[in-house]
Length: 337
Ligand code: PBG
Image (cartoon, rainbow, N blue to C red; front, top):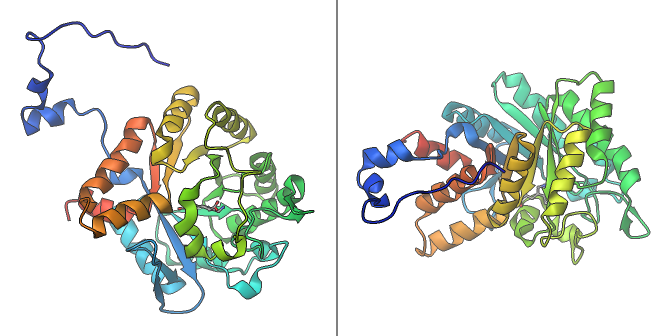
């Protein structure tokens, strides 16, 4: 923790409002800024051609076929967004108990990554590692006696990471919360010659109810049913445990760490950033996006203002960047268009 500043002075000599009086003085004393460089756009890809499928619980977000996804990625690049995260919507006939489609080098995410790479668009590509888009039960790992088996899941996740890196992903983002996955993935990537592929670990990912719209988008809410992920995702009550998780992931080779969800967990972001000083990211998740949009649709909140304010709050808390479904709109606003 940095030293606590000691404020000296009192009213009426000291009037904090003086610095707030003008636009120029507010700009001069501003402590944090939201930049297009801070934004990561999460996207959803579906099979087929020339299809744009709206996600009803996430107004403005669509599932896109690869051709349309490439258009969106080109737009993100033109706006100056540094990176995109791609999530596949796996056709249900390919979902199995062991989630083996995750390791198929020709699965939807791998075909997407190759197609985007082939366009030559220079943008960071982030691919998630977890089995939930591929399992018939919607859990992030494989089951043994109804329990998500840690070490058996690691074997599959490591292969999944390698096929995605081979297909062109620059960053592997394990979101599964199995113990030891960062180390196993790092070893597997290096053994396959992918020592330049980075790991952005979902280090402190909470068993949150704010993921609902995402699960609708990728079609894992149906498969998960009444199930939950509390035996591997973190208890929302805990923060010291988040530091231990982050410490483990850094020791295992994580290049960047992520806290998720975002807005209800700003305290976690702040402590992680101050404790470790490593690149720290926040995920403003689907439920946060849905919430703000629902209120804006009713005229209860101003969409653009709460979008920019909520994103700036992540910067103030110490995030180096934010995964947000607002990325395109926020970039447009920040670019003045
Ligand atoms: C899958 C995954 C989830 C999210 C990102 N990767 C959902 C979950 O863990 O059930 C959530 C993202 C969001 O809500 O926007 N492991």
